[in-house]
Amino acid sequence: MNLCTNKIIYSITCEKRNLYQLNLGYKVIDFTFCQLLSFRKKILLNSTPEAFEAILEGDNYILLLVADNKHLIYLDVPQLIQLQNVVLSLFKKEPVLI
Amino acid sequence: MEIALRRQMILNVEIVDMLNEQIIMEQKASSKYLAMASWCDQRELRNSATFFYAQAEEERSHFMKIFKFINDNGGSAISPIVNEVPHEYESLRAVFEASLDGEIAVTKSIHSIFKRARQVDDFTSEIFLQWFVTEQAEEEEKVRDILDLIDLMGDMPLRMIDERIPTE
Ligand SMILES: [Fe+2]
Ligand SMILES: [Fe+2]
Picture 1 (cartoon, rainbow over the protein chains, first blue to last red):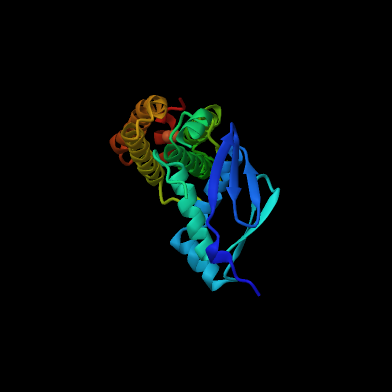
Picture 2: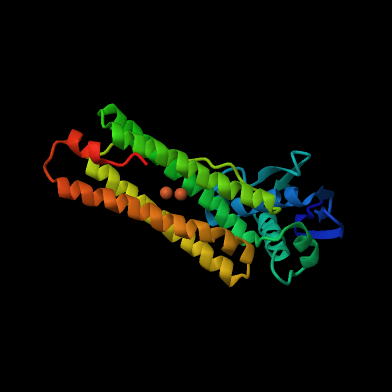
């Protein structure tokens, strides 16, 4: 079995107006700006210390429906942390694009 | 990326988060006022009930204003959910005291968003919030006046105090 989750480096890029692409390594998800805002909210809500605790006490992962329910993504805590960093840096004045 | 995001939205995303929190707070205020209206209505305190029904509507109009502002400026407004609100009070005075405390908390929250908007150069939100700063000063004063009135009337029967409560 190949375990590759930790090797994937997520990124969000914008080549076209109102098209934001999240590269998860195994797939690329297209977001419009408003979908991106909702995605940001979901990631931030699920990456608080309390949320992490709930995930770790539960199934060790969460499933998130994103981009107007078009995609279902599977995330564990390390992946959530990485996505949180990507999302946070995206909206910084000088975003660090990983 | 900064340019790409700026083309979508004039507002600072962190301020949008705070405004969405404010929407919840205003909805909660609206629900609390509705519960207070119910308390007064059940005790035949007609003027007080009318006052709180009007307050409930007003708080709703406050969050609708913020809701529209967020969406009109490229952000994403979130429909508020509130949990349980208190339905029991010891006295009419306690109802108005709770109402004043609620207004003070809202004022503090508006001030902190205003301050943050200024810090992050979100002038659009800052100007928008100016109306709320003024509004809160009026709201607090309105409740303080009523509390003064209740104090003045002292031991008068509740019904007589209620007759003096402004219904707006
Ligand atoms: Fe309000
Ligand atoms: Fe108010």
